[in-house]
Length: 307
Image (cartoon, rainbow, N blue to C red; front, side, top):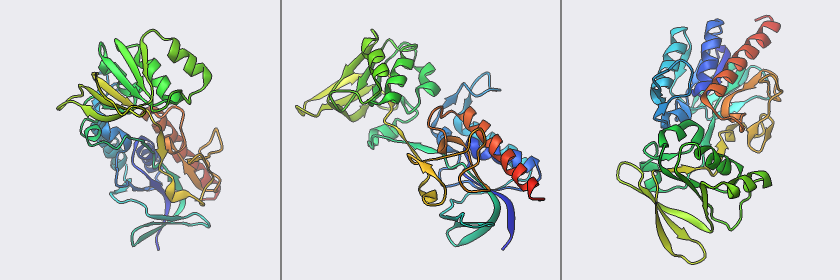
């Protein structure tokens, strides 16, 4: 079985930046891109906040450029998803179905998945008025009335952020009080541009080709109400894609724990980067920066071993 210096799991900004740095360090990385290759940016239309693109860039186009750049330096990219790993001893074992590889180091960059409402209309209008990231997309909704779904800190943060662009922001929450921290609750409730609809869920996102509003169902009365809006921001949390690594590396709340300021995990030789670690910033640029750090950490680790 051929031993690789480094295997990278995931192909979002963190994974592809790690691949670029590892490839330029002549580590000949193998990247298992995963089924959702490209990560969450594949669901984003225009990206205006990634440095170097003054006229914006489509999310899928940005990921394609990152992939080409890594491949230019001989990173090997396979459209396969790791189905099993064994980090109990080195070289580590990584499997995709029946295929098996061995690795001296590994970088986990499998990202996170935004939790969705599970509606057909939401899926159909994703990127056409339905968004999971106010920081990424808020700018495109200037002068519109917007809806934010959720009741935690992240939902209230999104709502407050969106008041910079919207004419009105309405928070839709399924309960009769927020579960967010007191400071966030107080800010949201006191803000003159934020309205709140309690005890309600979204039954359907309205619009043909572009969001026009949402049909809300009151959980106490069962009554339906159509609320017009130019955008719907779903902010009910993220799920880190770490199921594969349970019992392999230390996790906290589903996220991989790293030894800051490095990207080292609880297993020597295994590093992690991007949204699989970061539940705070969750931006393409911060994920890319972490991917760079992970590749450099892996390179130094191998160097210390004489590789």
